[in-house]
Image 1 (cartoon, rainbow, N blue to C red):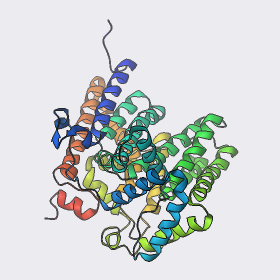
Image 2: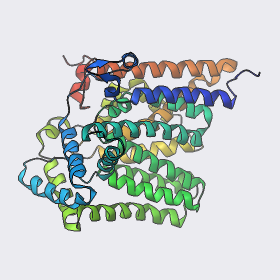
Image 3: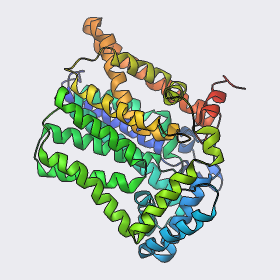
Length: 420
């Protein structure tokens, strides 16, 4: 029997399956390894998060899902109207029920598996984190081939913030999946213009993005920048239908959202109240502000090696590096808008950059190991493994040993002992 070699597709496929299994295991909810308050033998291999209290936002999500379970999906307009009534009386913002994808998927999880609202939310967060990991393998294979897919998926498997989002009933991992799905389908449409399966998938993904979270605008601006830059960088061919669906997709999402809320007036009131009262939320004022490079500081604290490698790759990019430029422009476009929101900066929102940054990091490692001759594959694999180990240790530092929940700068600084 012929042995596996680095250029053998079977080797990459087997290694990719093993990496996906490791990443999926790390993303399983910690609660499934517990029974009667004790952790199972397999559970001892799972890095149990230090923060096990149910957070404030998680309680609100739980209440929304409980209401859907009790009154049915037809009660959604009542849910939205009740939010507007309550929010008007409150001095600061609470999260709205317009985050339909997350709430509805948790409702479906309850209907199928019978889990309670909170357990359903935890399982949905885990599921979408796993889906993003699988999407990473497909997307990066389409961008750069088997070796790139294997390397980027390995780095994503051990990404600290990705694992963290899978362990809590928070929506940011779900949003990261939706944004990455839109980015992938935009790439496919540029490579295969006027193919209806890709076009329809792209439009539906944009609608899904709008229905996931109001942060959709951040990702949408990044997509628009990529689409506009295609005129000079030539990622692919922009068809009239692609441009049309780039606007029709979000409009479809807004239309569905308006119908779910019961009226346009209720929908507008929901977002107006959210925007106006989020800026006076004491927690947001205390933790959500900073200079334009705030996200760079936070990323350097959590994933320093990845950020350094990604920045190093940026300085070696050429116009021929289409895939890297495509991902970089998405990050730049969304970064500019996200860094401009006063009292609205949090590293959780940057989850959608995890794949692009790791793709750029792999490109840097490729450049570093290129002059090493015949053993380049060995050195490249060793370096990817070292970075994975560093990333996994970072997860322990922040989320196991220091039980962080909110990814605010003060907590990150204390975890790495800069503040004591």
